[in-house]
Amino acid sequence: MDVLHYARYPFLKDAAEHVRDRGVTLEDLLTHEAYRQARARGKARVIDALEEGVIGLRPMGTEEDMLEEILSYPVARMFVSGVNDRFLTKRYALAEGVAMDARLEKERMEVVEEVAFQLGVRLNTEGGEIRMHFSDYLRYTSRMRSKEWKLINMEVKEGQVALSQVKLARVLQQALQDRIEEELPLPVDTFITTALGADLQELKVRTAIKREQFKAEDFGKISVENFPPCINHLIGMAQAGENIPHLGRFALTAFLHHIGLSSDDILALYATSPDFDQAKTKYQVDHITGQTSGTEYTPPECATMKSYGICYEPDSLCTNPKANVKHPLSYYRIKNLPRKGAKSDNAPTPSTDSRSSPPAGPR
Image (cartoon, rainbow, N blue to C red; front, side, top):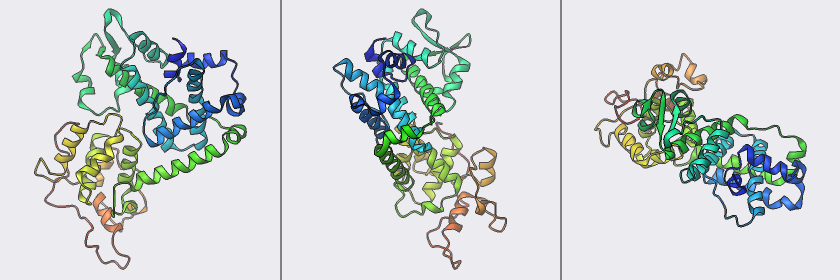
């Protein structure tokens, strides 16, 4: 690979070796005036991830431009580690993965193979085909909920799964995301935090603001603070770009619909998912909310959510025997009751006419 490819894929081991060969030390990178632009670009990577969800590739006309791009990657990782916030870490990992995916889809195959090798993804490309052992395929696609990724829908021969270059790029995106999430946060000492200084503090503030915006975004007058912990957890997964289990998506969609969110607002919540497919997601949302099915589904009861492993972080109200909470909507209704005990006029109650079983549809 040449220097341009190191700049396009700065997470590669060869890119780090190129930096070492140039004699750039950590102290130089964080303090020397010669690397001021690399530090600024590193900060910009994090801001792009936080605000846009993807990291763009800037024009690079000289080898010095390329070196700055390579160096911006470790700087960005130090910024993310210094902030030390899971929300930012996952946003950053997703953004780096999405950026790499877009580049690999149009890349020469020998470059794709080298990226896969350095990410630890084993491939078989004999005969001009791309194949991966089914066990490796399942490892990287287990969180991809779209029907097209199910092993039963893939071409499998002698234990090898056939992939297009586009699908391989998506698998490698997941591999990079997993690696970044596993590696971060890095140990950050006083020297690093002092060198990053005001920029680090700015990113901490930006992260806190963005996290709070996500929590309140698109819910209008609905009492977000009164959501049951399971629903808050599922919302957090959606906003962090994590893939949500099928029953979790069903429960979240049905809950938000019953408390008054529009289908468009619910659809927007899922838009940050790595495998977001607007047409399929809209079909699911419209089906659950009754727009196409004629049946307005309610979320599953608490017992069902427990059995499927999506009863997250139950709080004191969930476990209070006197409250006897058996349904997410019951939790929300109780939380919305006025303090004197009078029932709120607009608090939803699980309907006896609607269904709480997931509809059969694309998953």
